[in-house]
Length: 179
Image (cartoon, rainbow, N blue to C red; front, side, top):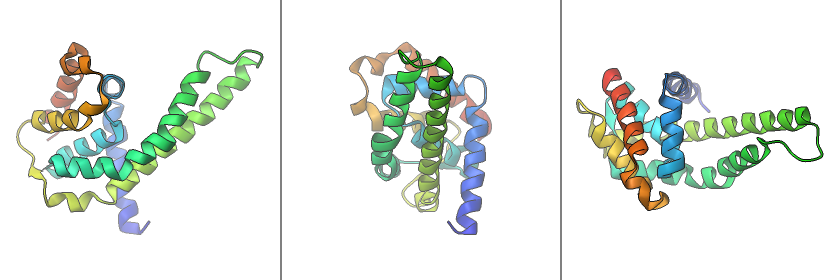
C-alpha cells in the first residue's frame, strides 16, 4: 500500500470506527446485516463517502463495491463470524476460559478481515466520483439504494420490518447531521 493509499485508508477507517462507536449505530448496522442481508463494510464505506466526500454512491458504484468485497465476506468474514458465534455459549468438555480466549482471537481475526475489506474499498474510492451522485441534503436515497442492493439476500419479511426501518432512520439521522 502506498503512503497515499495508506493515509486514505487510515482516514476512512478512523471515520468508520468513530461512526460505528456512536450510540445506536453498531446496533443499527448489525440489525441491517442480520435482517436485511446488508454488508456492513459496504454500508459504512458508502456512509463515509457521503459524509466526508459529498458522494452518494449510485446503484452501479454500490454494486461495484459489493463485487469487490463480496467473495471476501462470504469466504473469510462470514465463516469467522459463524465460528465466533458458535463458541459464544462455550464448548462442552473444554475450560470456559480457553474457549473464550479462542473466541476473542477469532473476533480479532474477523475484525482484521473487515479492515482488509475497508482497505479494498478505500483503494477504489476515487473511481466512485465518476458515476455517483453528488450528496443531497438527505441520506435517505443512498440508504434505500444500499437496501435494494442487498434485497435478494434478505428474508422477504425484512422489506416491511419495523426494526429495519428504524435502523435506517437512525443511520439517516446520523448522516444528515454529518453532511
